[in-house]
Length: 111
Image (cartoon, rainbow, N blue to C red):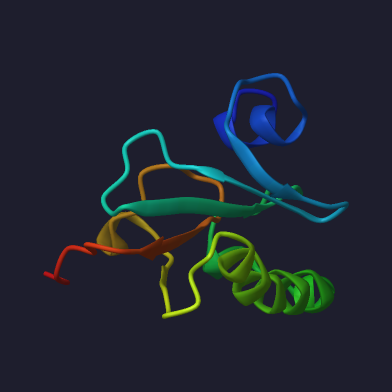
């Protein structure tokens, strides 16, 4: 999607403080952090949310999920971290490109 902010970040067309990237995913600091460490981890492929995953996305999702703890350790989060993904309006999704929040330190309580 040409106008998707996360697609633009993945293509290098929009600024972001990138902490990790490879051929399938990219991780960058949230511009409105809700915790001491608050990263967004996205697939480079545009997928709106979990509802839009297909069988052909299995390898991508396995890679993303297995990368989360590696990214956390690279950020020094040895004591643990939280991951959150919001799906659809009812799930609180605001940006329509699937993303995982990776958070640690002073994390707000779940509502």
